[in-house]
Image (cartoon, each protein chain N blue to C red):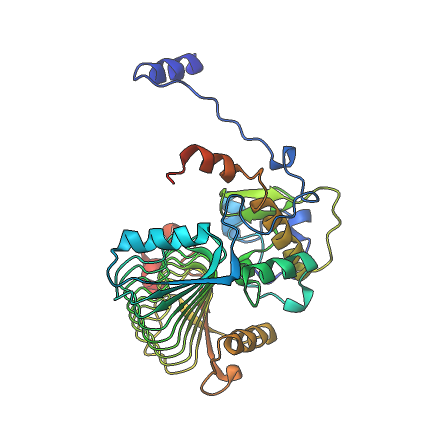
Length: 281
Length: 129
């Protein structure tokens, strides 16, 4: 009877009742046979095939379409001159690619990318590399707030200073800041790693659920449930390798970085009694 | 993730330890250490080739990929389908998490780059350009 009622209920507004059933991926996927290294349908590009264009007179959509057109022609290295701090440039690239911006980007630059290696010679506005999935992004100068917001994977590097809420809600990947970072960096961090070689503003790692933050300078204050951790040999090896990769150095050596982790008192927040919540907060 | 060192813990146990876990009848938290940093010396030839093709110097986004344990079976989480891909049953697992993680990374790449990945069909159906 319950089934009939459900079916009737969905037929009335013009829908059909669909029985949802999963199927195992093993039925049609063999890990031994598959050996592709790029996404099916992605553009075949050659890093040695270089192209460049001037973006000064183009609008945002035209610039992004131009990048896509060049990728479809097999160009694996693309240089964009004069981006003039326009917003949302280089977004949604799901391809292997070397992409160079000669100048600065506005807000939401190179967001949602999955794979490319991006170099930006100037500065970037808010939310650079927001929701980035994979690849590398290196910013030579300073970055605005929400740098790497909701980052999911890949390496995001700023050689200069960054604004507030760096790596807010990050779910993976690595953010490396050569200079200072603003307040509420690592806010609600859930996974991944953040390295700040300079000072960190107030409420660092506030409400972080997991992940790791390393700081080389002074920390103005820790946020709720962010606690000091102990550097391990794996931490040191990883930090040395990553910093060398991007030509950066810890001010007092990698071994003297402060490590911040989640205290994990907020993991079961809903289950805490009011008095316990007060204690944690 | 607690500090248990037994790599097979979630294959042999249910992970229900604390009072709260016993109260709700399930494990709280991940079934693997999501903060475990990779040892690059353990990289597989396939992964080495993959990062070379992508133009990266290390594992990049795969640093966050680990072998997990879902319903008592080793598996790797695929963020693109928001689901677990189980490790073939006939595969012998190494005795340490670092090597298991490398296997999980390789399996995930082989799955995501496969023309049989579910996203390929979705892309064909819904892509705008």
